[in-house]
Length: 629
Image 1: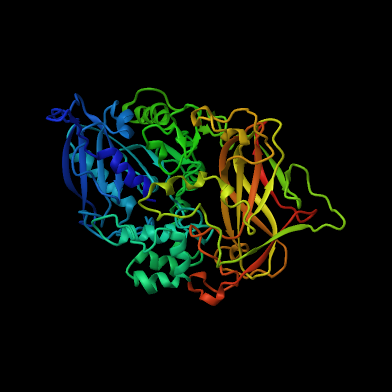
Image 2: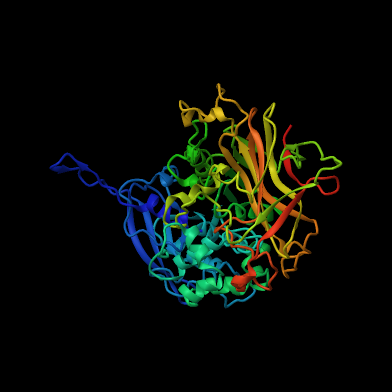
């Protein structure tokens, strides 16, 4: 939840100076904002550190754009206009940034929690703190016009979204961007109960080690894969390193299942309407919070008579839409589009302009999506579009993928199998794996070329023939496995992959030109771009509240949601699906022997298991693609 927050602090507020020649320097730039730091009181007497940036060229009262963060407020006004603020600033806003309670100079305790209880009049939380702060701002900030907007990415997006539960009357529009909604089900800390080990550990250390800083854990080795493997069972994190001093880590390992603790944390369950116009923003390759914005969009859409609920998504990593250009992700170019700038110029700025300045037009669409593969913007009157048809792409025992159902064949096995060994787990990205923060390669691991694992003996790959025409998928993707294990617990990871032709990697190929025809054979795979990836944990197949053991050697139906996407598999490309049972250390190791809590498993609980994936009538395995005509 923190990459975008910390990166944005650099984008938004880093002072910039440059030397001119060897003996002279450019004169100081004229200030573009007046800077003021105040302590804003909230209902329980706590005061929150808040910075107010007022444009020096303002000639009339302006709306306030408010952002609430745990990552630190600017220490000075920016010398130059940050790229992520440029489009908004052109319309004129008073920018306000506030540290959450318990962070840096803000008083109180930082809970690192999204639990909101509006039935308790004495309770304080991020919803009440935002309400009280807006009340103070509209009464005390000079030359504001009484209208407030909120926006932010990641944790800042969460504090924005939480205002939907009880918005202040002056709050006229918000844009939650990459907000988490349910930390157990499918946001930062877990994927359907499977712990995101490296992320959860490193993030909780960063945010709860020191009130006055963002602290990075000091690893003893650079390759974090090696470090986590040597760590052994999760009990060793407290036993050897944290010693019970990080509250959220303690709560995470204490509450292994989807109990009341996590259900209270899942604040989106209280959202059933659109009380404030909201521009939801998501990245299809968001390595932290790809799920939350879609859930907010869905829940807010339950009652939206004024059509206030909008969805924007694109081929972005976490917060990339606030970067200067957004012209590529990893080595994948976007066909000359500067998607981040285009989003801010044509979507974000006009949204706030309409609701806070009263000029321009209300969005006429429900969803505005940059479609990967075709590299084009598309608007939709509804999401998912009604034209999309759920279509099954089947696995076959020869390792192929096709839209043809598997047939029973005499004398052949109805499955493919592999041995999953927790002592040799499949890495989630190519080693050496740097620590999650502060290195930059964490941001783009979800677009990493998957050829680095597709020949491992514990990874099954299924591959289609080259496509004879473009295949457009728009909507929710999912997978269904018929699978068994010799163990009594297990994980299955499913990856849907766009396999580029080999000629996309010719030596003369320039990334900005995109894939193009050439002389290389298509019989050998080129770049393997993941489109959708997810894990399911066997102990939760029958329910998330209480884990149950799997029956050894018994084929079981595994439903694996793969979230929303808008992607074109181009003519000449192939479709691949990879299946594996470890994804380390981004997902903790399943012992593969059922234990009451994996977080309390011992070393001898971790055992190898033989996994089988079936492809036969009545035991089919497939992905479901929302195919557009």
